[in-house]
Length: 118
View 1 (cartoon, helix red, strand yellow):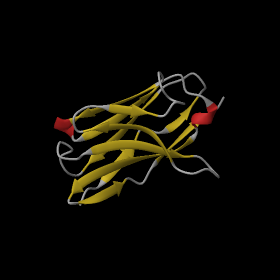
View 2 (spheres, one colour):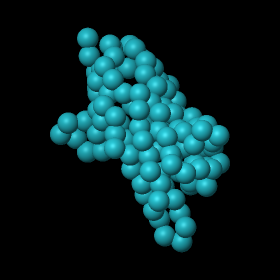
View 3 (cartoon, helix red, strand yellow):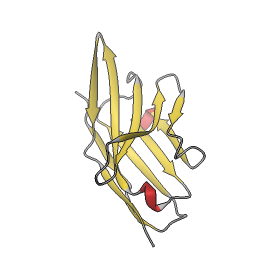
View 4 (cartoon, helix red, strand yellow):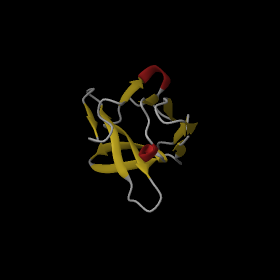
């Protein structure tokens, strides 16, 4: 069982920055993929960024060049650095861990609210 806790959300002005953290209850070294997703009101949850255990990353087109996903294995934590924030980035941001051991297991955090507004 993997428990994930997100933090770092809040209210920020357009053009500002935030760093989200996702702390895992277990080591993230053996987790195949760590990802950040978001869900805006009335919209489906979408992938924002992901990082595989080997270090490869994937970003949604809408955040490329502005957001960066990273991990600190010693702290069992994954980060999402968000720069040049726009009002359309407003959403609840969720962390997800994907573990493949014969079957695929997915674990979600509770989410953290990010609001970009002047």
